[in-house]
Image (cartoon, rainbow, N blue to C red; front, side):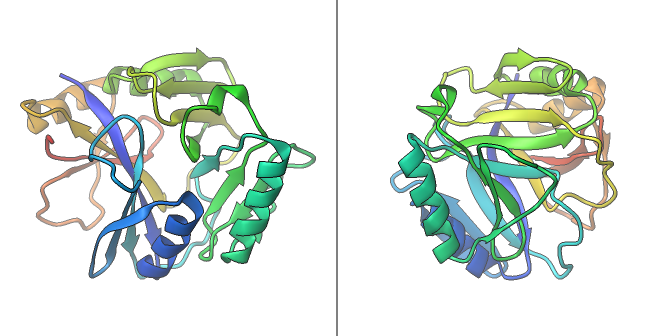
Length: 245
């Protein structure tokens, strides 16, 4: 039994507008769109698959109030590509963001609703990830996050230090999932969270029991009677265990 990261869920006041922004940024298509939900996938992608972590933009009434603890890093292949991508996403509605990054080689921006993301300088490690280099989670203890998420999922642990941990699909494709040590304390529900899915034929309830034994806890976000199970990791970051597919 195992889980895999298949998508991130991003809250927005206007899911359609934020979805259009990210579709343009990534060069992806809007695979399906219904009231309050906009789904984004690479064009021609067979969901779910290891080559991409998709995005669901979910409409919520509450506005963004604090820096997101989960964000996207975008990959570039050259200094010119980085500059061009920064210019293009700003034309689409992104704005510069100051999260205390100081003088760094990457550019920190925010989407039209303030969701932070980074346009990275070229790095060889991300040369084959696709447009999303990594999904990055702020945390207090990267080693503990590596333990929990490394056992919860079947992804391969590539790096773990006191300051950072990185995992990637065991297939060696797609973006990384990274946990970065920060001094910030989680105070509100994350506006971006991870969605995990069991493999076909596996048992969703058994997977939920298994990750609870690793330290996950049940949470009530007002989700009501739904097909997925809402949990939180050992630092309180919300995630969902979806049905097998």
